[in-house]
Image 1 (cartoon, rainbow, N blue to C red):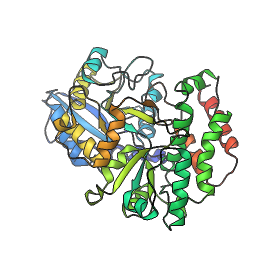
Image 2 (image 1 turned 90 degrees about the horizontal axis):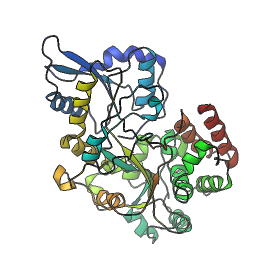
Image 3 (image 1 turned 180 degrees about the vertical axis):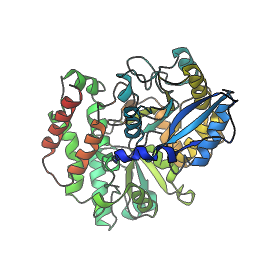
Image 4 (image 1 turned 30 degrees about the vertical axis):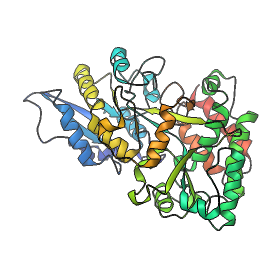
Length: 424
């Protein structure tokens, strides 16, 4: 539910509103009942059929009210939501947006904290200044490193735990004629996975308060420790450890390439777990992004379900619907199996959802449940560590720039400039 595209949606997309909006259920509201608009998006796992069924189930909790979908033309919900807000069409309910981009303007209604505390494992996992605007229903690790066991065996290598081991493994894979790393570089968020991993592990792993200190102005992206971490991505580029033409490979094609065994490793968010073919379940392993000293640092992001507009036609009814949808185990089942989401509801095990998951899912979920160093995945947090303005996209673009630029400090300095502009 955290996945997003950095693609820019044209303003003309608003013209699609009528075409993209549709009643989520065949029936519905009583005569004269309320209709609430609900911003959703489609993905391979969250299909129109999924939305229709999930909305119909939750509508039963709000008799006399119908829910009308507004389907974003891409997975970039935030850009579309802002366009709708600018045109006076801000939805009553919004799925999986980035709350920090709306709270300053007072656009979102916080949930009752007692309900949050009662139902979720990490009640404050995506809180902003102590308030929760999207229920913390699920989580992701961004990135993990997935690997092809057969190709590792072919090259005589084992999963690395340190950065130097990661470089050594990559060198041996390359010498064996195997492409070390798959990367969907044409999609900025996918291109940034190594940069996200390096800065999350090396900078935030040592200083979990780094993002808050950046807000305070006491640290910068151009500081030596950040530049050193970012230089790791440049190292991978210079050593030709990515596939040829990585910047021209789409995110969708990167999944196909890795699944087809065209590369040995694939740094990607844990949502890739939902894309592992069943005939590859025993062949795909996973390890955390490696650190210099081998310590385990987990770049973590708590996702959520539904935000409620303060201007909703009926905030109380919208809240009832949102709570019902968020606790529906069938919705979590779809996210676990199709989107690799780690469930965060209290009092439930994986077995309670009736899911069948791969060994890689079970192995990576252990990083969520075990005690270790969890830090915000930079560029993906939905809580107080969310980056300001459009800095997520600027961060992703910096990773793409590092394919062609040796000036790592210069690229990091640009992020400082973008930060200052966004926080003025």
